[in-house]
Amino acid sequence: MKNIFNILNIIKINLMIFMVILLTSCATSMTPVEINNSLPTLTISRFITQAQANESTNTKKCKYLVKGRNYNAPIGMSTKDDLRNGAKGIDEWVKLDGGNAYVLTNYKWVSVGNNGATQLYIEFDTLLCE
Image (cartoon, rainbow, N blue to C red; front, side):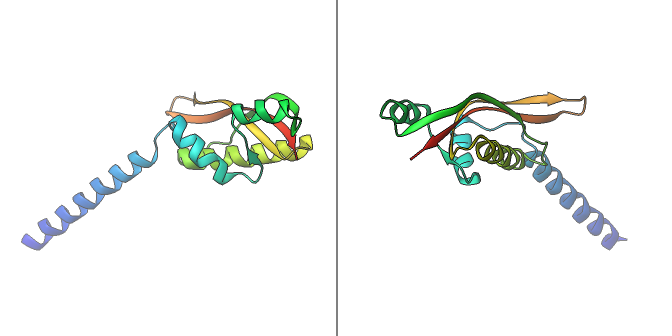
């Protein structure tokens, strides 16, 4: 009988650990620093800050192809998955626009449905740079 209680306690502890991990991985947003550190590693296209874009366009090293592009990334299992999906969309639009770089101008996670799910909404400009 004592073994059964020990097994049940182990199961309860494992279940609690699983729930903590699940809830931690289901965060609904990322900080600006997390975005700026992660997004460039997930895209093939060149990530350019707004300041770099201003300097590059003034010196004619880059030119804007499309300003104000919007993309709703497919919902992932975590914010990192949302960001991966967003990066894929950015790369596809940059390629379709004939560019090789992008400037992230805005992003937000928007609540979708009644179950607490969120979707990443990205705004960016595409550029062609030397």
